[in-house]
Image 1 (cartoon, rainbow, N blue to C red):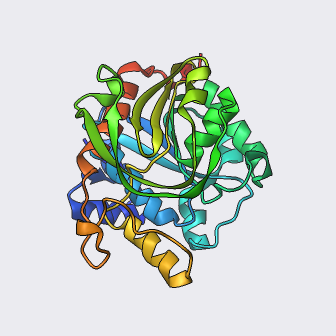
Image 2 (spheres, helix red, strand yellow):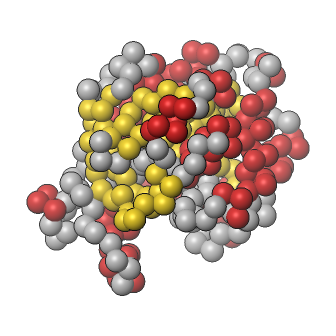
Length: 307
């Protein structure tokens, strides 16, 4: 089954060309099923690129998905056209005031790693989002900064500044093969990593109710389940396109920012070569498993979500 998107959203054409099943709102209305309502709280500067990445993953499942794009109420973006934001995004304060509920919510990363959480301009509203998920969202997926912020809010787990950027493709081990989120996963897998901060495993272990599902000897814990808050947190980037790390590397080189060649990304670690995507299949597995878990456990009557 396809993902339901506005036909004029850029992701509609991008995913159609890639062979991902998409349908317009008119076509979706003909199907006598309830689509899963998934919200994307997009905190990244390049909104359209991020929309494409997550829509690609959740749109590859066998269920009809209705994707809603959400932004922080007061935060402005300089990297995406105002017309795009006005047409396709709704501020969180509007979502909250409406009382509507979601089967799933993805909270993306944000390029504000070095800032203490409480110094982020929209931190107060972010905390409102976290509390709102407990009554209006069946399952929340926090990604990179989004996951770090959420695990900090609910459990006090701190983020720690690294002395160098964790950057590249790192092998991760499967810590819980019986987890529903890891159905079909190999014993280990490669995941793109791009961050200046880390969460420490001993602090996660010390918090009540957290279970680490994927971790790396080189880059630390990656995927953590928080059953009590109906959430999972991933600190790395399964959603990245094949060229995303290259874009980040080329940007830093052009700006004169000290940066290492992303590890295990280019053949022979040679930036002149075309990078290899070795995470795509596991990315689809993880997000597909998340969507399936939502489908199997969310109430049919959406008013029952959060009760």
